Image 1 (cartoon, rainbow, N blue to C red):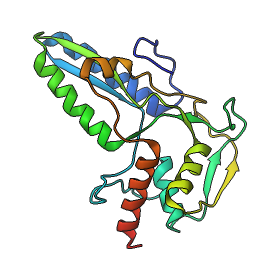
Image 2: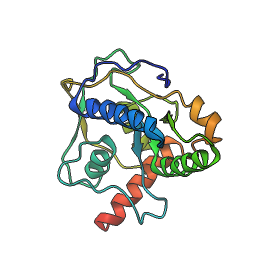
Image 3: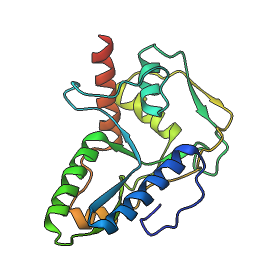
Length: 202
């Protein structure tokens, strides 16, 4: 579980490196009388409960949940789980998956927080996650449970750059913003599937 005081480690990927660099630029900019909140996303998933808004990756999805829903819809032949020999409960990597609506409400709370602060220069960073670690295989199992749709999946080799286990400590954002997540993993996956079905006319 990662909190905001954890020191930056050397990034495992270019993607992780860009996150660190961008936050450092924002922190430096705040010294010039900017008021900045950095929300450190963990893994946003899901869709609007109405199924009117959702995620539509271009080409092959890079994120887990769109790959899961596209496999369930028959667009992808099979989900490949990268490794099952990590030091976790079932051997697959662990992440913190947060519903996109909870992400959206956190943004509103961040603006309210800034509006209530009096400083002319401000920088603060907050973890934006649930605080619950979920493995890739647990997520697949939960998807099958809440949708009743079987996912064709198999185990492949580890993927270079994958961190074994990372999930948020959300205490700071919970306290400062008075914010809590409202959606659990099952709801997030069900909403993602409802969006996929609407998109594909299933």
